[in-house]
Length: 398
Picture 1 (cartoon, rainbow, N blue to C red):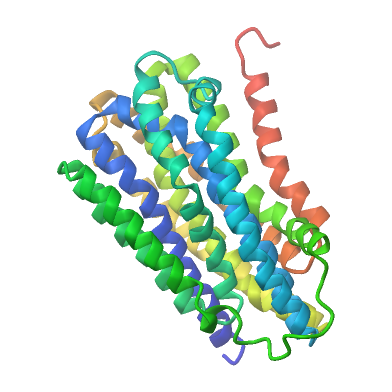
Picture 2: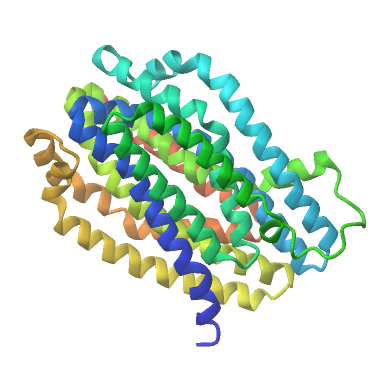
């Protein structure tokens, strides 16, 4: 019980927050599906890998810096820990600006690359343009949360994610009701206030008591952060590469209805994936701290508890989704044909849940303890395996 309490205090708020972030993604599908139908669902699903790229950049930067902060703090190297924390904020701002400048002129080519054509191009362009213009806010929103969590403030990190979830629902609803101008102005104002709140000193610098010392050089901080951050980046981005591959296959074999079917499945499966990621990321601060203290026994125990939690949650969610399978398409306003296909095909994706639960915790354990090579192999092997599988399943392959 002595070990379970700090484990639960870290993991359960993270799981709850990640579950809400999955619902956050579903909000787009719910409102668009109800107002536009299959075409809108398909357009958002095709454009979503770019959204994931933006969020992955923030997650990779934030998590990489958070791991380095937590490990250095456990090693009693407080000045280095604070310098990593400060460096992350600079890199988050730079990343958001660069993504906006680079991606906005490439909206149409990116949509074409991801399989959009004909009736899907216009709604995809409208959706993606808004997403890209908000890159800075998305990068900061995803990047600050792991920093807060690694300061022992899992509940505060959860509140930050809940705030984004509630704000998204409110703005999507106002947009659907036609208050477009008000939504944009108020959204920017609220994002500005949220950013200032997240940057307050109590969240970010309260642990480092010695601001002097030997600061890590900027280039060293950057490469150290991204040496760790490439794995969390991949955890967010690689499923979207898989989504891109599946979208192209769905377009080829099922047209717009095929993409809409996979969109509905992807939305609900994403919640499950994020909950499992919440177990891994929630246990990461503990594993990083014990690793920094050279306490290998506690690292192993924490990882074992995370495996158990992920297995129980994964199986329970798989059973629940299978039981509700026939209502998933209806939830998103999909056509009757698409809804029937969702109910028929969902089990294929649910079968991978136990394996995924193991991988999410294993990957988090590797990057939490700076074993980056193994985390890369697991994370980036996923889309490669899917690409080979789809290639082998093409007509005419013998």
